[in-house]
Image (tube, rainbow, N blue to C red):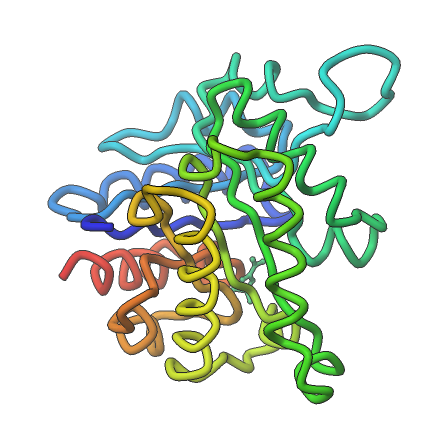
Length: 247
Ligand code: PEP
């Protein structure tokens, strides 16, 4: 990876007026940024984000249906996302695994649907606190990524992976740069065994990344960018992270 990738995950936050301000402020702050930047917004705001994002700001969805089309009330297909210029779709975020029962197989199929529509899936993996304390971190993230590799075969070099320790999401507890690097190195090795082009795959860190800790995390060898929740809702904080990724 040469250019880093910074992705905001707005989660279920925002409204038309506030989004407009945030999209304008973030876009305007991107002049001179030397990294790729995207915001993953709630589905009803994808059209707004597509129109208001300028200066190279890319847009993404926070989920995608595992189905192609049909009688799946409430679901949004990859092709529909594509209609709104979506470049990325987060799949397997821990909040979806936890609150919506998404399995490794569901996540792998969602990644496949996104890829088929020309959308880059941002595949989230990460262990819970109990799993970390039981010494299962490596086994858990490897199992989660293996499912996506198994289903997506030679397309695997087209994905983005986000390591998001569940205990660090929205808690203010960040993995230390060393803890994050250790898992990223493991994921990189797993991807290298699956594709001839592992260097094409951006490995993002996510979990309470903020304006103060971004530089030290992004300085690690195998951390190619960040997936940012809370800090992506404040333009100044998000742009400080973008600046840290632009060095
Ligand atoms: C996330 O939701 O993907 C995330 C990393 O959230 P936060 O930055 O708020 O921990």
